[in-house]
Length: 184
Image 1: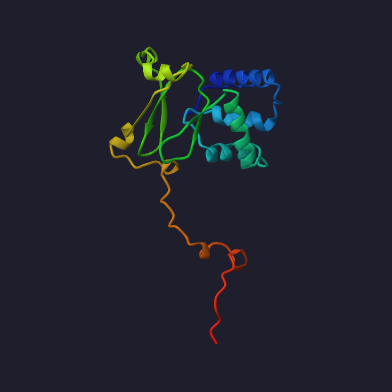
Image 2: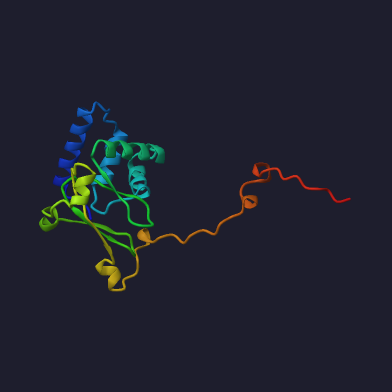
């Protein structure tokens, strides 16, 4: 789901303020990468971000996007959502919230719950160090998947590739040299 123009503008203002405060250059590439990450509540993965950025800045490489997202995470502008068995997704929502992650289609949905926010910190967690934030993830089948709806193509998990032997990888010149006896 797309964010409203007002929400996105506020997020972009905060982004510029944080980068200036950290004395990091505010480049057109970083602006567009953050804009595409923050524009949706769908928690886009790196490929979706790259596709959207490529529409306006076709020369931006995947490596640039990886480095920018790592910088944004370091600055606390985004966080990573890791659905089990799927690609990492990125979340630009900085407000306290929790996630429901569908184990079938991989959808990650934000939700707020005051009861979860007010849960006391367990002693076991407090004994490990100072707790600075809390985040709860629920995993299960979303309403669409539970109702038997087909999995959206963008969220399908690719079938695992069969393992290949080292001999089938690359060209002959890239394969390791194997010495064999000649038969006469």
